[in-house]
Amino acid sequence: MIVRLRLHPAWSVAAVAFIALIGAAGFRSTPSVMLEPLHNEFGWSLGTISAAVSVNLLLYGLTAPFAAALMAKFGIRRVAAVALGLVALGSGLTVWMNSSWQLLLCWGVLVGLGTGSLALGFVATITGRWFVKHRGLVTGVLTAGGATGNLIFLPVLSRIVESNGWRTAAITVSVVALLVVPLILWRLRDHPVDLGVTALGGVTEVPAKPTGNAARTALTALRDAAKTRAFWLLAGGFAICGATTNGLVGTHFIPAAHDHGMPNTTAASLLALVGVFDIVGTIASGWLTDRVDSRILLGGYYALRGLSLLVLPSILAATAHPSMLVFILFYGLDWVATVPPTVTLCREYFGAAGPVVFGWVFASHQFGAAIAATAAGLVRDQLGAYTWAWYGAGALALLASLLSLMLFAGKHLKPIAPGLGLAVPAAKA
Image (cartoon, rainbow, N blue to C red; front, side, top):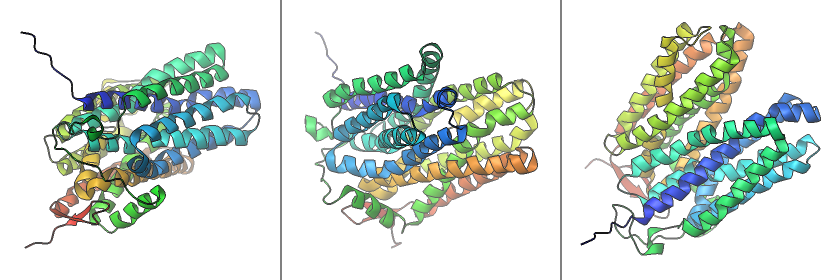
């Protein structure tokens, strides 16, 4: 007798989402390998070219809540396909540009909108609809798709730029984005009921399609969420998360290490190693999120990150000595381990509106990153070293730990605003 085990369709949806997220991360990081070639060909200043990257980063964060609202109204499949189309269009059009404003429009606006629609709000929507069992683990795996995309695309595109020029790299990104669209349309489904199944580990749920304008839905979710203490604690903690990762370490680790005599190539290799451990740490965090209270996890993650940043100034040196390698290992494991528990708490506190609200929380992450990137540069300019930037970031991370633990005061909830499924602390009997 042959027993055939049928895989739940949720895993197929997650696999397609993972592929799309890998691509989105690679597409978003492509400008970093094109800075020098564009500067050399057009004579544009690095500041001008970086402005397009800044617009990209800003839209990457701000698009998330609106994209989540659009997914609720029009479906995940349609929004993801359009997002990849924007990426393909933005990347492909750069081949014919001859002015810096065109770079701002293509890589800043079009690619920013496209990749922002496939950001962590997309992850929250997929896991919220398709998974009850293993939701934290799948959130961790999908979040790790970002780091995986960087590891895959950056070396490949760097090689293409070096051997065939930046235009070939831009066309490569455009073609890859278009190739993913048929896969999205074929295998990605909006709700389990579309296939006559339940969410993995859940019960049959008939989704209620939101009425009205998607932008209004996103803004209404922000308005109602902003009335709750939980939202500000989550957004504040996640803003510090962005400040202490992408904004500070992601932007300034290489020049800070160079200040201590470390070659840029060595520092860049260490930063790439952070990405490798990031994948392991994020998946492990997802596994833990299914088993441990997310408030405890966030409190622990931020506290350990803060302590590591406080130690960093004393171990920066000209060589990658063992203490530095321990920091890279530890910090990499903790890089975006905060995402799975934050997504879970948004779902817990805000119900069906969790993905949209998480989009706004993620926007705070990007704002925190942008502020820290500028602030650390000012510290270096004024004081001649990054020391106080590291200390300040460490103190902020410890504050984020406290904010996360303060969420225990609002652990028991009751639903309000049925159209959005928001929640607030339940009144004591």
